Image (cartoon, rainbow, N blue to C red):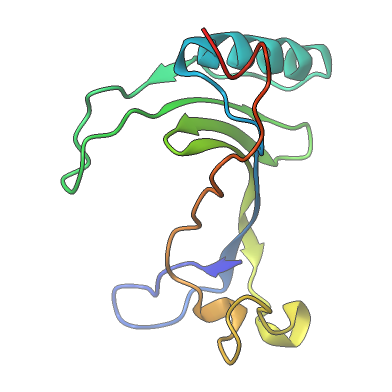
Length: 141
């Protein structure tokens, strides 16, 4: 959960973004990214989720490093944004919802991965866990 930035005058925003991210533990070869995205897009479409276009950011520069990311996203009927992100070191699936009424640690509790840090103080990007499993199809050309 990340609280939205304060207003220009310093007044705190009453909203936050709530999200969860999962890392795929199987290594996916770059040549399989579009296949994986297509399969997930067909699944989402079959379940009534509007699906965005496949986005390829290969060679783009983020001002700090060049990226090799590819992404596809969809929105669930109840407004949850789902995004499949494919980049080194691996593949992740993120679910997020914006505009959620802010409720800090009194609702969400303490962040077990950051002892002593409140969840509403979490400001840095989540990292994808590197894959550890090899698959005969997904991990190879």
